[in-house]
Amino acid sequence: MRAIGRGLGEFLSWVVIALMVALTAVVVIAVVYRKLGASLSWYDEVASILLAWITYYGAALAALNRSHIGFDDVLRLMPVGARKVAVVVAEILVIFFFALLAWAGWKVLMVLQGMSLISLTWVPVQLTQSVIPIGAALFIVAEILSLPDYWRDVMAGRSTEHAPMAHGATPDGDPGNGNLTNGGEGNRS
Amino acid sequence: MILLSIFLALVVMVCLNVPIAVALALSAVLGLFLTEGPSSLVTVALDMYDGANKFSLIAIPMFVLAGAIMNATGITRRLIAFVSALIGFVRGGLAMVSIGVSLFFAEISGSAVADVAAIGSILIPEMKKRGYGSPFAAAVTSSSASLAIIIPPSIPMILYAVSAGTSVEQMFVAGIVPGLLGAAGLMGVSYLFARRYNLPVEEAFQLSRLGSTFLEALPAFALPVIILGGIFGGLVTATEGAGLAVVAAMLVGLWYREVDWAQLKSAMLEGGMQTAVVMLLVAASVLMGGYLTRAQIPQEIASGILSLTSNKYLILLVLNVFFLIIGFFLHSAAAIILVVPIIVPLIAQAGIDPVHFGLVVTLNLAIGQQTPPVASVLITACSIAKANIWDVSKVNLPFIGVLLVVLLICTYVPAIPMFLVDTFYR
Image (cartoon, rainbow over all chains, first blue to last red; front, side, top):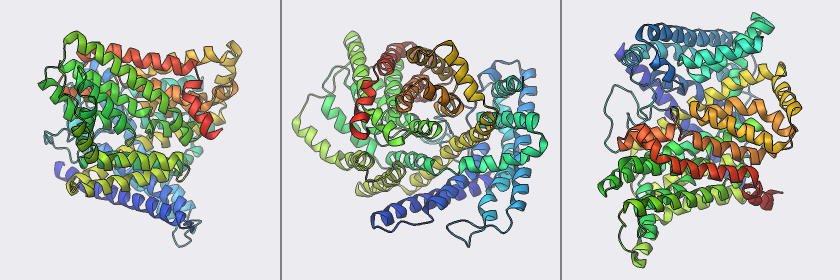
């Protein structure tokens, strides 16, 4: 399971990096073109789509690292028995939501058959919207793969949230706790 | 009745440590299911896609990325050397340096956690070596890093502007004076601490050293000039300015010959993931917002409160207390996304300027980053200093006091944040 988790993490990392590079390039090229007096018609639409893709592929990666913004202080105050029930209920709720999202996203894809983007008519909307069912399915897989480590942390009373420096950001380097990436804290604000 | 069950479901799920974005989306799903039936649930996919497909929020990944690249390219170190040459001769010099560098860093990165991680990991160990207590070192770094979110550019300000339908550029301008005021106040408190505990001065002031460190840091200073000058001068939009910030940070890194590709890769990854975490919240709030608006909830809240009082200063006081309380329990991004769309009609009907109110909210949430249990910036500083959160919080009280005073001043003397906005834009 660890190996699958690592593989998925590696794959999602490269997807997110590629999307970030693409978004940066699109924004910069668009500024240059606009300053030269020739605005790109597809800029707004494509940049927004890239952001949506970063959102869902990145969200699956964040789920793998358990770095979504949450509030775990109540959980840690519960007795261990109640904590077990709480974690199971919470995991079921998360998976239920993304299953619903994947189903609804699939339905929407069926409806969108044959439509294309406004500025780039050769790009089908089905392709851009595919991020919802695919992203939701990846989120579920990531949630399940990261459950064992999360379970151990919660039962040991370790906060999953209160250790922003645990991976990477210090000059001392990565303590190597099995996380696939550094900067696992998604709660910068 | 339905509204109450939605609210209860949200609170219970958050307490179970369901990610706030998912809890919010599920509560909206519950509301949709109860009022509009199961067939309405297909809209979940549409709203969650449209919520993430937001052109105005592209500035967020760009600013996060610019901050991360800066960190990977040795800019932070040079800024520290320059500020140290500038004000290191004062008693408690390193604390002053921490506040001063935060001011510069805040003008490039939009995130306070990025600030505290970058500056703290260099300055906190240094302060401990020079005999500063670790709680003090953590407290001063943490509270000055929170200035980052009231000084432009700022990710919470972008989120607010989009949630409230107001101008990002005007929000940025409104933050300048309060940010400087806050920095001055924090420096004052640090100086009193330094006198009391007889903290050391750094090297004596030397004009030649100031000059040489200034030249070293010059490319780093070009960053805020390009970014803020471009945005405020109307040459580029906030989003384009953010894109330029990424390129400028890369160029400065190349200039210093310190671009580390492995670090750059992790900067991209970190930026993408942080963006995803915030954007999932935004998408969930679009789902919830659509439901609440159809159910007329924000309008009802507005008319309910306005039937009690129409005094806008009283309303501002109530909202301030409310935001301070939720600041204890929510991250700033989550607080803005959850609350702002609901109270926008109230703000408009009470005659409060949305830009002024946005600054009040942002300052408030800067304080929220310092108040445990949920205090992302403070906790980051504590883990760098290896200090206990409650010990640090005790030392941090006077610094929080400074921020509270700035908050009160900005709330009740709107001219202080709004003067520059009026001059430039109105």
